[in-house]
Length: 369
Ligand SMILES: *Cc1c(COP(=O)(O)O)cnc(C)c1O
Image (cartoon, rainbow, N blue to C red; front, side, top):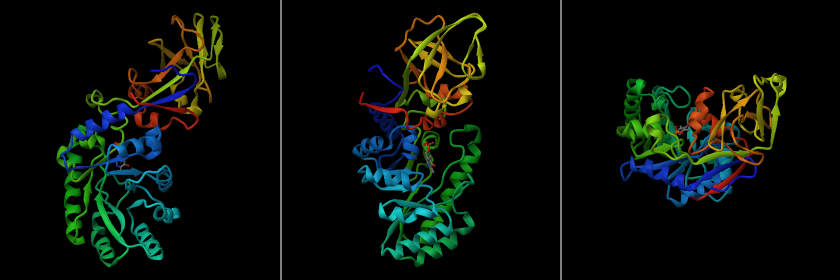
């Protein structure tokens, strides 16, 4: 791997391919694969990831918001794109860019139908989302008849899929709850399809659902985090290859005497004298203040160096006492050998938050092996 010369998020497409193939190996041959590439493909680079997966013949993409889908279309992505959480204010942009909305309230369904009529659309693909226990987005079971009535009258909408989302697929202690969700989804989607009168795609599982509930894959699965190299459980981690490595370099090293302080508000006082390295990455890049005061560590020449004092906007200082290093040397914040999962865990967060928080200021570099 090439050495970096500034703060860089390396994105490894060979690892992405491995993860995609590993997840596919868990599916029946005819199960469709939807890749979730919301939030810049979990903080990496949505256009690069989507182009790569499009070449690997992924069946569907999903994003959270309409503007994320617009960006993918502008980057040349032709694969169908499901928008999980469209908002009323820019629904017409979805039509303009051939994005397929999830309809989760009557209001959004009626408004979207109105726009499709206004724009002379026919059989515009939409997806119906049911709430089965997450209590976040989706129609309730008791709205089934109302939705079916509405859909029976429409000439402009065509339902492509009916789906729901699991609340605790990674947590085997919540297995009974999840089995209940699967059961509710099975009943609801069966009744829905019967009422609709034509077949549609059924999908329920995210990454952990794919791994833990093979009986619930239905016609399609929706994977995000696994593609990027993380499982939600330690037992799964070894099967994935993290696609991203966050690296930086040492800008400067200070020798600090016993009793001297480091950083804003004198957040660190050296107990015995220390070698302190300054790294050009801070909370504006996604290294939150909760990593300060020794909570977070970085890896330098294979050795762990704790973050000392307060995390600044553009910098952190780390204690490199006893580590044979110099200005310009590489610093790893997380990577294949030092996982984002464990980096996140020490700060009481999860890999999802750490990786999606890496800000757009950080240079992205694409590696192919
Ligand atoms: C984010 C999201 C996913 C992907 O979940 P992972 O745990 O990252 O695989 C799937 N479905 C919905 C509705 C989501 O919001």
